[in-house]
Length: 237
Image 1 (cartoon, rainbow, N blue to C red):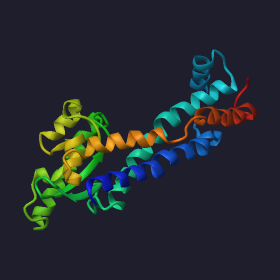
Image 2: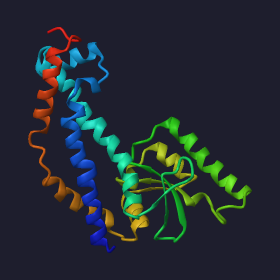
Image 3: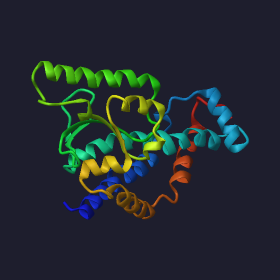
Image 4: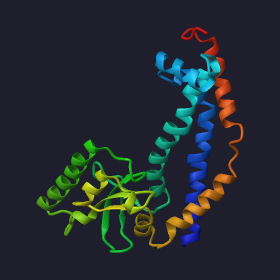
């Protein structure tokens, strides 16, 4: 595929498998009370914050908003991006534990084993040492078994899907001292071979988002959830 075709394939994948599925899930599973583990104290407080009182509508918003605007879309984004790379033939799924994809780097023409991360702050301090150890152990085992001839630290990378190098957290910078953390435009360049692929993709994704019908998503989802809350024995209004 040329650059334009590849961008369109990714845009179509996002629209069908991420955005529209998020809308569907928001009006289905996320609008059902049984899908939540509820902290009764916190939810009552948040209801008062959102509605000024403790009400079915306030409880529904306290549950629905963070799920739909945070947890569900971020979770689906990460898991589906990995599948997208494989499905569209951009990369291969990795057989090595802890690696998400493998691909031929279009800049240095070396095979890369990559753990994918969403953004420049999506890693915690306690993740740094285990990740480096995982990379090191795999390289040492490959050398011991005379496999993956000629591999080095630069062949095991962290690929960050969006952001700029100067936005990387200190945790990523620590990893980058031993294994490259490649972010945003450079990552997509190495992955696809097109220098300006990332910026072109962002423009087309924004255009696609404008065409998705989300007009009544929040209202409809909250109303459905509020009806279940109103009749639930777990609440006393």
